[in-house]
Image (cartoon, rainbow, N blue to C red; front, side, top):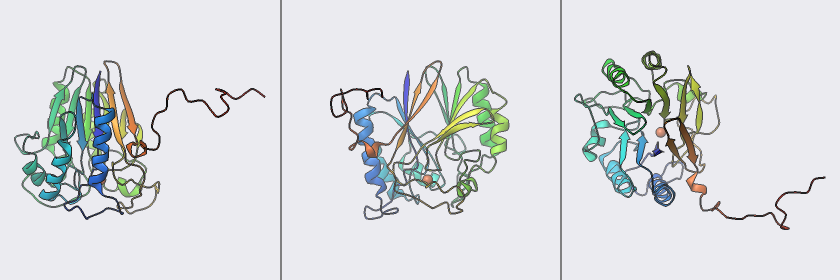
Amino acid sequence: MNKIVILTDLHILSESHQRIIGLDPSQRLNQAVAHIRRYQADCDLVICTGDLTHRGEVAAYQRLREILQTLPCPYRLLPGNHDLRENLLQVFPEQARDEQGFMLSHIDTPHHRLLLLDTLRPTPGTFGHAHDGHLCRHRLDWLEDRITSSELPVLIFMHHPPHPTGFAAMDAIALANGEDFYTCVLRHPDKVRHLVCGHVHRTISGQHRGLSFSIFKSPCHQMPMEFHDQDASLSVDEPGAYGILLLTPLSVLAHTEDFALAGRNAPVRGYQPEGGQQFPEKP
Ligand SMILES: [Fe+2]
């Protein structure tokens, strides 16, 4: 079995006094990493699916690097709409990129091929923020090639969901050409098994056009359950979380861990309700 931890939407800030809705993203991420060291020390890989920083400054990536180096296993990074690819790669020069500078890479595990797909709209060498995602022809061709050449079932990791999630504000800044993504993926319905995204700051699972997906919460701020609000910056202080994928030859299991609750719900063995009765008596 392989265990992969998913950290998404970290939104690290460049200075320690800064906050997002009163929360310190670095403190939250440190808490997540401590929890991973304690409970997921056997994980094989951590994948961070974008929005690594809030504003893309070099100083923020440097703060992020200091935290991630305390993980118990290797990590791979993907950019989100709050990232600047060039600054990210300046601080993490060892992270994979292709010959054109896109953060595209694949990892073959014993049972699956993992495809890490860069959905950032600005292309390498151009600066600026665009909150929706886009896959240019180059990246779609790369996706097609890596699926076709794989002898293993494929899992895809990317920041922007390529389909609606029910949140109007986030659906407006999803992957702009999700149709092109699904046209490619659905040419290989028996090979592409699961999709993992970030961006929404909410735990969402389901399927779209037959392809199952998981979206995980942030370690920091979350999206409130306001499906029709048009403000994509709307946030709420709910417990921070990360995802855990357990991969076997026959299955992809997606768990979510609200690590910020861990202090309150520490496991207790042999619990029995007060009064010593394990089960309520039948009426
Ligand atoms: Fe985000």
